[in-house]
Image (cartoon, rainbow, N blue to C red; front, side):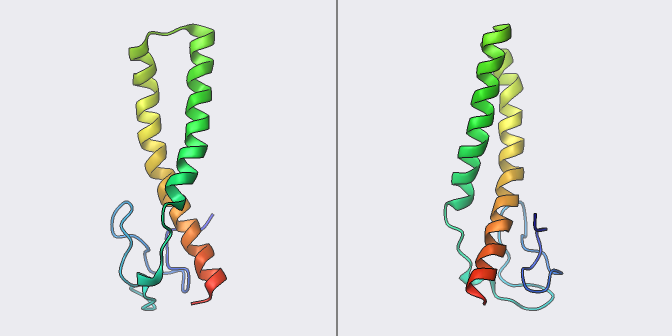
Length: 104
């Protein structure tokens, strides 16, 4: 999987924060204004993480029948942590794919 760096030079950072895209690359000056991943990263995260968490929660419920508060203690941190991690990775991958296909 691609690192969160410029798709052209591979040196400059792609994000200013967790998910905010920079205006341009610090190293080569590539303008990131034309990049639009839209809702793609969020859709992929919802589908992948939703299937994982739903399956895990159902498995846990069927096999151990824990109280609802325990399910929440287990799954809320998993959902929050993996959502941010996956959004950043998938957004980076889609940006790199868009760069390769469109050939800026």
